[in-house]
Length: 251
DNA sequence: AACGGAAGCAACCGCAACTAT
DNA sequence: AATAGTTGCGGTTGCTTCCGT
Image 1 (cartoon, chains in turn blue, brown, orange):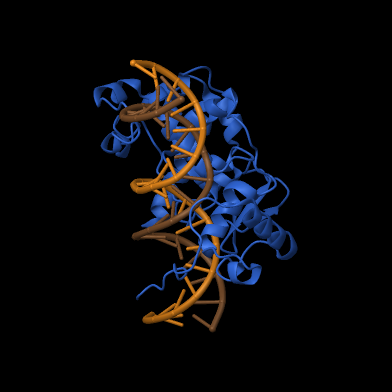
Image 2 (cartoon, rainbow, N blue to C red; image 1 turned 45 degrees about the horizontal axis):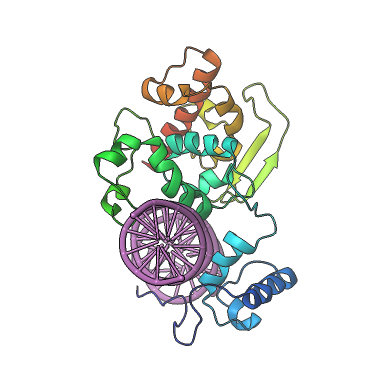
């Protein structure tokens, strides 16, 4: 199948957005809502690719975007989530209200990747961002095989249904992925049941989970998988069970 | 003050997943 | 089921600003 380019590049503006373009885009989305990105530039009178409009809106113009420096708490959460999820920026951003995946990705690449792995950085003489492209390609977490990074697969979950708690599940939610309703605690289902734990992270209390760790104990926990705290270990097992079930469902 | 290198960040690109027909 | 169109994600690029000399 030959893919059509998302738009003709001819006659379109590129590079930085002007305040006028921002206003046109913002006004249009306020009036018509998000979506239909391909048609948006034509309808709004913008000389931009639809993809570019989407990116500009999501990363910069959206009213719920939090501007300003990343706080220490946010930074700590990013570090922990990255240790857990790897470069799943959209998932990480989903746990940081008002922050975008692009912002977190940039922040990681410019600040945290060097902070968290200074030795690797020094070893490769990564004196600048342009000169260490090869070093950047190496995920410092993955380079250490002892770190248990969960490779999740992002799945769009469209609806969340609320139900009363039952005895077998500590959560009160059922998650519907692709219009199929399933409990948010699929790891409790029998082995012979066909399980698709899509949407697992949707319901997982990440901040609560993370707050159980003190200082750098999370990294140690990633290494040996044992915190000595039954409550934390239980949460970890829940995470892993979701991943295992996901793998099993994927065949 | 001028210059060059480093750093930060917005924007672009390609691909894969998802959805519609 | 196959194909075409749309959306979302992660990697990368390149422009702008900062900072040291």
